[in-house]
Length: 431
Image (tube, rainbow, N blue to C red; front, side, top):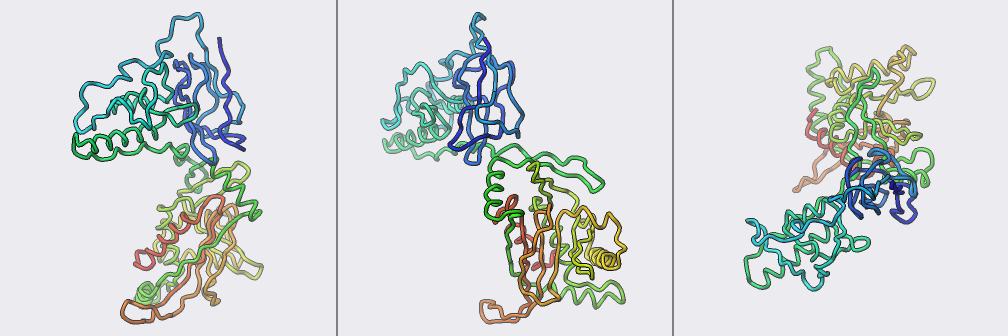
């Protein structure tokens, strides 16, 4: 008889959950209370146990899909009238019986649990997941002696860790052997589906399409409530450009009539070299589909003031340009924007933006994002200031990077990591 299993309530106020992983396949025979899938909400990852024993005949969705609470999740044939299914029976005795001798370098785990964790070892059924059962077998632990702290007394990885730690402490305190290392904790559940690989896209290279996780969607909702539209935040970092300015002046002295370099192409180089450490900044956010498209090509918008207003012409494949090519490209798109000769390809398709107010004297700014981009990097003026070197003050040339990020996609720590990578390259002249 086929029974329909609906996704149960997985948390207060949760209307849907994201499917992270199926632990079983259609056709598998499963036991009652066996975990068949992992789902995630904005609060936690949760294993979903089956309320029925039998054969899985249907499952809903693929990893990354959203499943509403109460929606049909799986179908299970209880196989009544069929031959008894061995896999639906309680775990075999060999699985729950400890061998007479522990493996080398494995602590001898007493098969009578400490009083604080003891349960009836004669229990007819142990409620746990196949992963926990396999781990207990590898550690030679009788699950009948482990107290479960999960829902309905379910035994979790945490419970195994606590049982092992208690057993080790008991062994050490009894003087029966030397202290042994505390076992490694169980691995944390996966945070969500793995990002999709880069896939072929338009003529502007490849993109990686990632659907927002439940947690990321919850953050997006909260940020929009706090700041409707595009809830961005700004992050300002001071950078010492003394050595970079010295290198720039030396390069210009040797130019012999060639391209003269401002500081902007050096900032561009630091930016494109830092993107691989934080690829999420070179992305576009599709709010309707709640997807982030991460690009391998950096199509860098350059904010340009014109008589008609602000324009953002685009430098394609900015990551492939050296500092001289970057300088020439910046000059070209700026002139094309001002005289109206920019091509269509130079006016659309930017994936992030670089803006500079340095020539106007500002020491900090709060750049506004260019949607659907999620990051904009602002360059402020270079100023000379006294800096303590540990023994005395010395004049150094300092500049602020004022950057803004879409908080629905990028958090403060992620933004700081990217800007720190730029700062490191600028100060070390790794351009």
